[in-house]
Image 1 (cartoon, helix red, strand yellow):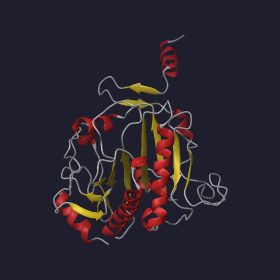
Image 2 (cartoon, rainbow, N blue to C red):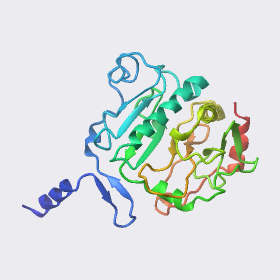
Image 3 (cartoon, rainbow, N blue to C red):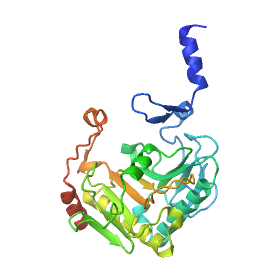
Image 4 (cartoon, one colour):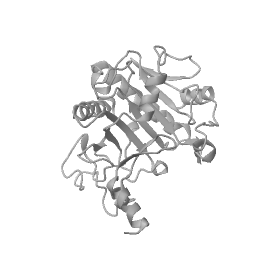
Length: 296
């Protein structure tokens, strides 16, 4: 066996989870996802009658056909059967059903012995790699606690989620508020959090779920109104790990990272940031919050 063949054999034997020796960052090798279609060649698979949704539905979750993990630990969440829609178009009652589904799937996946962390997220728009326009998000159930979550636990304190100054506050709905972090990495970045120490999505009570649903609709509508176009963004929820390890409580919260820094102009993350781990935000957070407060 040649040196190249030996190296390839060794890689095949360790395919999957690896840790970079320089950064300590985990990575999964998922060559099977290379075959994932870039865009549907036929009808939308998420519309009623499509390959993933053969029957009528209101909201729906199902295993990802192109998962990064084995054993059905990656799921797709459909927000609505309406193809030309978005979370911003949902009624508060319908958005609440999405929140309920996120909570139910978090609890179900989190109860598995092979799951330590459940990440609920959305990639909206082709600019962030969304291959299907139909309104949807995803859920990844990790068998580790991801480094970003571990870092938040290391840095959080009793005052981390206290209501910020009015200058950066954008909107409040009941127990949930949204604001632009003072150290925002992305233009028009938003942090959404409840006013009480709720650790995860399943633990939100009835009113807190309604408030979160209404706030999400409000925030996404404001982002869309900012430049009079659907804002491409990445959104993710951080909640407690489900690995039964005792930790300082971390309040459930959502991050929204919008991509546009001005009308038609995308904010790119380039070598100076990736190579240093230091972010350079072209929009002052107070300015961003002011613009978002008046955007309707």
